[in-house]
Amino acid sequence: MARWPAPARCKRRLAQELGAARAAQIQARLTEHTLATARNARQDHDLELVLAIEGLASRAARRWGQLLGVDRTMLQGRGTLGLRMQRQIHRAARKGASQIVLIGSDLPQLEASDLSAAFTALERRHVVLGPALDGGYWLIGLRRPEPELLAGIDWGSALVLEQTLAAMARRGLEPELLSRRGDLDLAIDLQPWR
Image (cartoon, rainbow, N blue to C red; front, top):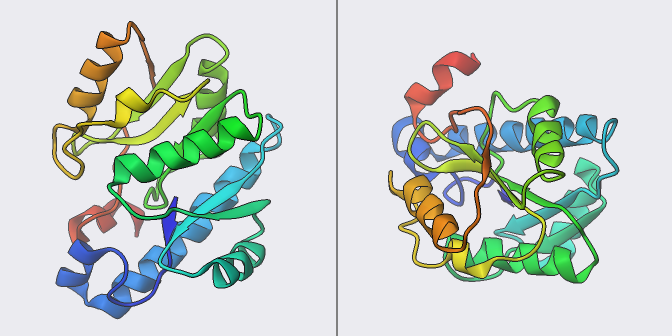
């Protein structure tokens, strides 16, 4: 899932610190890194790479996706992050996917082995999560749609992981947790990436 990297349309918190143009450049670089990493993960798994885009119309989104080498592009649509994620999960399930993994595009330390670990975990478990350092998560993987897991979450808060784990427990799902990773929201988050 990615936003079109245009000034004032992405990485708003980072833009407050570094300026909108610089934040957009960073978003573009992060998206390219994420997709390159996902393409590398294909060596171990038969994956369809779908880019769910926010901030572009469908024709422009298709062109951007072709430029980035994805199999398919989708628009994220309106709504909260949880609703947009649910929409992508349901679309993938309707297309026959037996394992669905969603990641954002702001993970400078993402490696192909992280994605491989998620797909391997889904062979054993129904759900996998990649906890983020800020209290959220950088990856969610499912075998089937579970809309209740993404409803009622305080998106953007430090409670996202805790609330999602509680929703999983209520559904009787025990997730496999991957390595904790940091996403890139603020200028300080750039330090390990430089």
